[in-house]
Length: 594
Image (tube, rainbow, N blue to C red; front, top):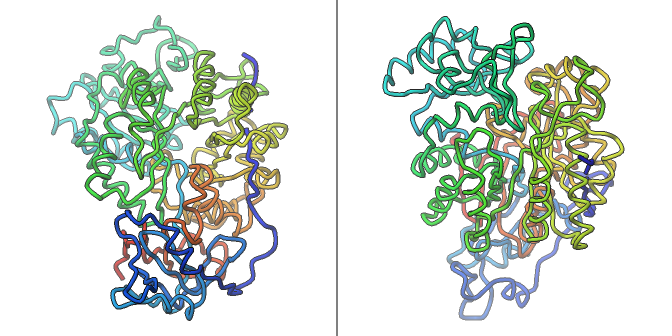
């Protein structure tokens, strides 16, 4: 198939260095202030008898970094109706305090806008555990996993297939676990264990037999059944749609399990200061769980729900179900939930389910493959014509070029340059394609677990070679090219949590933030740019930059208060940042226990 492209026309960063708080004050007029809010909106600003405006909540004596280039630093903010009603000096904001105003003294604490996680999976973190499946961290050793699976199998004799996750690829040669690891311990029970990426799984011989996978079973379209190079027998390692053979035998978590699992995940996400997310794989039951949380007033998060059209695990949704949701997206969108489309355009270099411009280093006979075809590319074009954002997992240069090309074709067809699309991961990127992200208004999203040479990144060297690995996730190149770069934790894929501060540090240093040592993997970006990836750029990716992403009059009052000013500490200490309060729509939705 012909290759395909994307970028951003927004100016993303003013290169002028940020001085320490140079307070630039402005406060809106009372006439404009009252006009900013809908009078029928719940919690709209109060107008006292004298006609003066009174804020619901006021924060004073802060060092507040707004991420608004026109007014980067202020001392105080006033909130009314869930929005920032005024920003400026203590004196100006204190004039808006009335008898019923909550007045909060920040006592010099640092505050900034709420964060955006542009690639996270709250509906995949705990949902299967809530549905009665086995969950263990990727730090669990192979021997420990065997013990856990044995205990779980004994406690659940009724389960036909024991499903568990998430084992670390770095614990096995070449990143691949096989049936030889499982068979001696589980000769009769079917075992299905998913790796940390979610793109691969290992099964034992009993599971292969139950699923009908033999030496003669052909690889499914857009997936692989790993085979012994000498005998051709399945090794038990399955990738992408190859996982469906066993995944379809596992019960799908219902709405209640999704509700409990998503609730647990969002509680942790809020604690890191995140107030807006792109959930990159939302099936129908997960969407219903999100809608229930919102109806109960418990969501407290802006959510872009990306509905997958090729769920290779076959455990959350099917293409017809997803199409049904997308057909009703305008009806199902709510104040906090916006529905969009998701494709996994490839998998990982480990299974060669990622298309390379140049052949694989360990096997020059192949360029790998993508995990979508012509019909899916046409569906992406149709989504664009229908005004639906598309978000795509694409790790390698051949896949990325193909995706960019189809976006270019779609934009040429209708001339719409405003609709934002989004490509995630960008591990291996051809230099010639980087400028296209800006030209085509495509978001460039990077995942911090792969920004430094540990874990999955280190394994990739075997498959792509040292030369390509030196440009692994070239964030700085995208920034220099003017693309809109965003942060995505990709939790729980390959990372123990959604911590954006560890990710931010790795973005800057390009070394392992856990040890602050090791080889530097490419050039890092500066702190102010990194903060923008977590705030206003994330809002641009969600097409919500007019209502969130910075502290400005009229935007939703999403703000976080930190234990220190990240602009005043060494880069290698940014991962130690702690959020004291997370404020969403003007209300405190997380407060740290000190």
